[in-house]
Length: 92
Length: 143
Image (cartoon, one colour):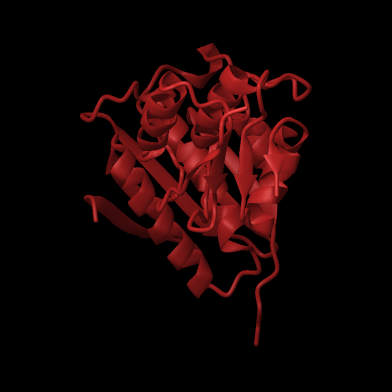
């Protein structure tokens, strides 16, 4: 299994910035990365557009490894629970 | 800051902007700052998240990302309710289909209403004014 790569967005993942994360994830997926970790330590807000970006990436790589989120705030964990994405992503 | 026009209302404020995602970010910050100053016990996260949902939806699905079209967001405080009213220049809301994702599926759409309701806002469509109306119970801190 390939080594994990970590992405650390330094912005809130809302509709105005979600394309930036989408492009970065796509670049890693096209390079063959199957274990992707997103470090949320600098992310305070994520909206449904941002969550959609995560879902699309997760659905592409999940057979190898679920999308992994680390350093997630309690507020964003609450949002992941509301949308039940906590059942799909690996959250640390 | 993007160009956001602010108009005082009775017990509230209206924020008006042309359809642009940067303006959504700026309007959310201005709305949260305004509500925060009213000493209302609502978390900045809950309010920011819900505002991002409804304002981005108005820009994208309401106005079709047409920068010539405007969005109006009115935030008002009642005695024990926070009211948020969002209006755009899109087609009448009655013709639009508001989708909710089956939460057991991992599909990238239909999460907005789940998020709004999950953060304890009620969601309603006012066909008379062609606007989205959100309400949430609040208490005003007197300290």
